[in-house]
Image (cartoon, rainbow, N blue to C red; front, side, top):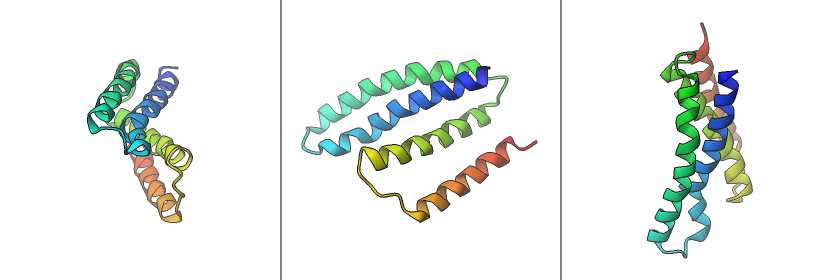
Length: 111
């Protein structure tokens, strides 16, 4: 139960963090200071979701496993973001790259 809640919270936090890190790329005309302040405001929401997510499952999962889950979610969220928000095309080489990262994640959870 805690792991499922953690995955949901980490997914939501990654949506906000991806927006904070890359959302300003569509607004290159905006002053850099404004982009930084807006990103920090969005990141505050991200941290408000990420910190409880990790605390919820730590002990049931190791710190390493939590980080691997978070990074895997980040890639999935970023694929949607780059495609839908930034309008970038998804290349087959990216699929292979993400599959290799996914294989690495699977190794971390193998017992």
